[in-house]
Length: 275
Image 1 (cartoon, one colour):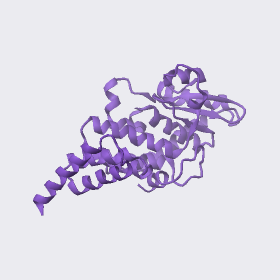
Image 2: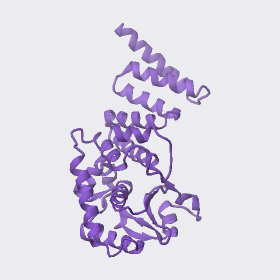
Image 3: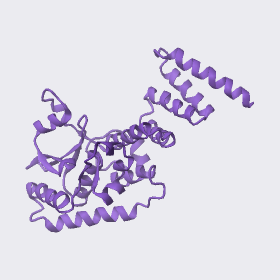
């Protein structure tokens, strides 16, 4: 998970393509949580093939509108990349995995967006991630032509007003359209996977995603409490104790302090039985 950890342990730098760690490789690193035997090379080659196919169809690499329209025709129209159609697919962890999206041509908004971004990067096209609340889109902006694109909804070009609607915003708030960097993207992907694994009661993988989330944001006290709870589910008592103690050290005035202290006392009694 070299590329994923490089990004997670770096600073949040929107638009910084020189930040250590490649987004495509980081996304494939993340997918190994679901697919432990995954080898990245076939999927990196697939991205290369998609970029080559799109490049062959472009009339003019200096025409941003042509890029946006051709990308939609090729990736969505010709190849059928799109968002999942059934509500229950939201809780399928494979939809967060770039390898699965490349193979099955369907997935979450953010995973499809990463695919588009990585194809664009190979063609030296300026495409950026936009982390809307409740949705994820991308933006093409070469200084002459700019538009937002929605890979989940057939890769179509959309307006800022449509972005606000997708975000569920009641008023037009330009801050919602800020570009996000690689760290913000992989953290959001991790949190999506974590929610799915927690919903599916896959505690082992929920814990794996939470470990990485904490690596990316070690200052988030609540995550230590959550990790302690997963360690309790997995009967990893010493690890649970460390996490609950860490949480209380970071949040000494926490409203649930008494509840966590009771958890710690119960863990201590369990550990005493084994000693």
